[in-house]
Length: 350
Image (cartoon, rainbow, N blue to C red):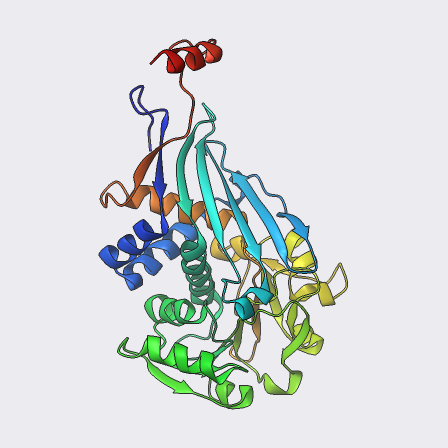
């Protein structure tokens, strides 16, 4: 979004209500496809970006993080928390907002809610990656963990990868009922399961998305057969994992940014030099992804700032055609940029 002299002090803000209107106007499946395309575009220019592990502030209750990046022209960051205990208090586990800024001026050009957008971009990333790694023709996904992310994941895999069946499981049967209810009428064959073993039966893709901040074993080694693609998105901070270590040792592991994933992902269970493949190299064709039909591919996803940058870039482009935003007067803009104090005096006089 190019700034002009008349509007350079106003920043477009996409609220939660605006985001809901965008989703409804565009259509959630179309939006997921669009996000996946933008994310894939930015993975293809991965070396252009500044990259750093997210800046995290951990507590006994959860984590608060900042996720910054820049492609040299635009700077972006996301503020996000992760507080698993919030669910018991009737609060969201994850909340977020994000910002884009013009590198040349340093002026913000977009501020947006990212609680909904993070769920959308996480699902879009999962499906985009599976397009490159999952078995060809995969039609069935097991969705283990049926919380706030689950429906987005299922719909993204339907829209981007063509799955037609989801097998749901959660330790809380009410979460599974909720997900099944929300997915009804979406063109998916939805099967509610009472055990994780039942959920993965016949599934070519297994997505794990649980919230507890602990070393958990959602999948054991004997549950995972040859040839599946595992989309592990729940383990995303130190001390939080979902997969038994032996599954990792049998898998070809693909990651976003190794320096972050080794701290936060499933591979925190492995030796620091255990080989992994960076996804951008697969997407650019510089290295292979899936090589045979017995290979277990594992996307050890922790979420990375470039994906949020892509999502914000997508939203910035969408609000040009869908006017779901308001302009915020965030930036002091005196007539004389050297006379900020005079701006205060003039405001008093008026």
